[in-house]
Length: 393
Ligand SMILES: Cc1cc2nc3c(=O)[nH]c(=O)nc-3n(C[C@H](O)[C@H](O)[C@H](O)COP(=O)(O)OP(=O)(O)OC[C@H]3O[C@@H](n4cnc5c(N)ncnc54)[C@H](O)[C@@H]3O)c2cc1C
Image (cartoon, rainbow, N blue to C red; front, side, top):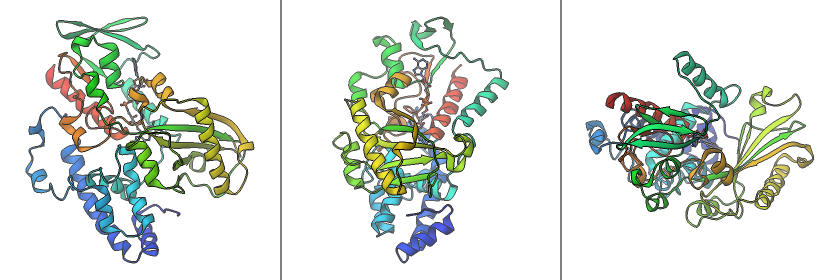
């Protein structure tokens, strides 16, 4: 299925698949727009320190319209009958950390953001956003120290005194930990000053990790789109292997990004830069070369079938990345890629707190605390915690 950009074209596509689906899509998006607006204005920008933050007349009045207690599955099925349309509308929640039947339909706001807000590519890729923020921070007088892993946080009377790396010690009035929350708590702090126990962490529901392939081809592939979802295998089985009975997927669906289609500078002339992503459960053991190689072969078979030509013999760059790399590069808890699952019992004040419960000048930011995983929420998390620090010091 070729998914066009923009609501008018999407409505046409939906109508061609299921009569009446254009109007259903419009209604779906009207409701999703409300959730997006309320979510952004009333829910996301909260530090999650107290339930009173959420006492708001608009929220109380709109609680049923927000569909917090309806599942995404039920919600989508109410609007669409065709299996492909249902799959398409449920897909965005796969990265949230639960099956569609367990994910609150509040998250149809993601469909709105994707389909009405649009899907955009920053020229030169995601790194250009990082670089722009870096340049802005430099202009504001921020000093950066690179390649210095924090090894220890030293305390004095239940307050951070300093942060230590292999080569330096930094005295601090307040510290914001932007690394993996579990890593900071369990590897950098003494056990007496951890806010959460190991049992607490083990009982958290994690969003998926992923098995990635970065591939360079020495030729162009015809008919490629920037984004392609390979939904040519049963979604239900794969979703269960991520969430219910965590295991390496038997026959995974996967996502392909071909950035060189949109951004020719991302590959040498006449070449293709592609990226393959299989969502997999966090915490899987046996992340071995053999397993990665076996999935590579499976994906190549399907890619060659889809594009109708040999690809393996054109591969000039090949790199894989999965759990053990997430752990080694990011100290990521259970090799997770997207933090904690967005389930109700891990939302807002039920997330790991952005302020330590035991160390008075220690704060946390990023995808394992409020408001949650993803690039925009992690950026908002930084803003929230900065305000908390300013408010408290
Ligand atoms: C393949 C993939 C695709 C994704 N796609 C999307 C998407 O389409 N949309 C979206 O919104 N989100 C997406 N995400 C999720 C998003 O990237 C994350 O939620 C977000 O980047 C998390 O930001 P963060 O600041 O919490 O953590 P990070 O960006 O991981 O930053 C934490 C930093 O701390 C460093 N660190 C760790 N330990 C130490 C230490 N001891 N000392 C010093 N530094 C340390 C790490 O090296 C890292 O640089 C994707 C993630 C992956 C992996």
